[in-house]
Amino acid sequence: ACATVRVDLGARSYDILIGSGLTAEAGAHLRRLAPGAACAIVTDEHVAALHLPTLEKALDLAKIRHSSVVVPPGEESKSFEVFARVCDAVIEARLERGDLIIALGGGVIGDLAGFAAAAVRRGMRFVQMPTTLLAEVDSSVGGKTGINSRHGKNLIGAFHQPSLVLADTDLLATLPSREFRAGYAEVVKYGLIGDAAFYDWLEANWRAVFAGGPERVHAIATSCAAKAAIVARDEHEQGDRALLNFGHTFGHAFERLVRYDGSRLVHGEGVAIGMACAMRFSARKGLCSGQDQVRAESHLREAGLPVRITDIPGWSASADDILEAMYQDKKVERGSLTFILARAIGDCFVAKNVAAADIHSFLQD
Ligand code: NAD
Ligand code: ZN
Image (cartoon, rainbow, N blue to C red; front, side, top):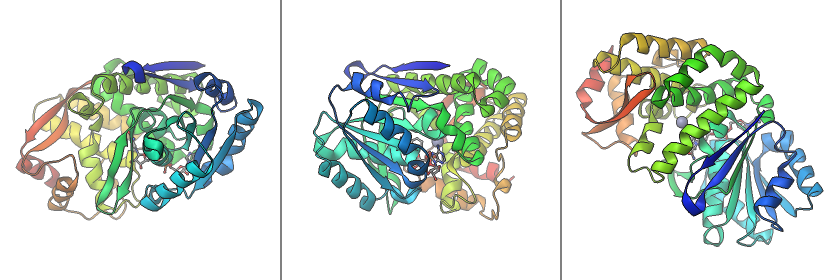
């Protein structure tokens, strides 16, 4: 099974290929994209040990000159120090503007390598080769790149679209199951925000998606197509793209309150609880039916995701703490909270000016 999704951005349009065996075939795809180009592969230690040899062999066979830079795994690598290392490595590999940077890894590597591609020589071409479910359905598509500042996550960055995304579904076989589940929360998100039929399909087929095979390819391709359509309408997040933040205003606050301790809460788990909160809040406000709210929550729980803040180990934050953490999110302006709320499964909207007092009382129950 193999699928192609096109991201329509005029002269900067690009394809997302999704399927089995794409790493071993990468040479042919890269040669078609950029004949004669050299590559710098950016990856992390976990992924390098598991999958870098397959890619290197593919590039050797295609006679593509390549070098690689391997950084430590984890969010800490989205730092100025590691960013400088990656930029230096690309320059030292004598890569020119027409050459390619390849991001082989999860969202951390995609954001870091993508930002290096945006900055080195004022913009190099780059290819996303996502290796986590989260990266395959979300972070590798859409062109947001960046690193963290000591003041907060993703505060330094650029919009820089890749030239190609190769999502090899085989690579997910080595992903820890907790990371897979967390990525699945973002898949459910696409159903909840705008595609009721896809949501129904997920309820019926999620076990097959977890097991691999054609259902997994279908779920990833549908997710990418949903994100691609939103990005094509609103590349720089002036309107509709905010829908992708469904569950994230809550989720980011939870992540912040556990100090990004991944042993307690990883991003997709925060999003799962956040989406359950957004559905519950929408139902309480009479915006959506209680039936839809219960359905969404049950599905997330069934797939092994947390749906309540009390599901977070050692949770002790108050409603005040959560609200304060929301205000620190760069997407939230004090006084006028913006949330993505639901009218129904498959029908979310951007709600501006949600009263902080309403959120506060909701969080207290
Ligand atoms: P990650 O990149 O840290 O990967 C998670 C863990 O899995 C790491 O330890 C990694 O080494 C390991 N790993 C990766 N692929 C593997 C594989 N195939 N087999 C075994 N282990 C593997 O985390 P993530 O969840 O992929 O991405 C999170 C990051 O993505 C955050 O920094 C977030 O800000 C960013 N993000 C960006 C966007 C965007 O639009 N740019 C969107 C969502 C998230
Ligand atoms: Zn997310």
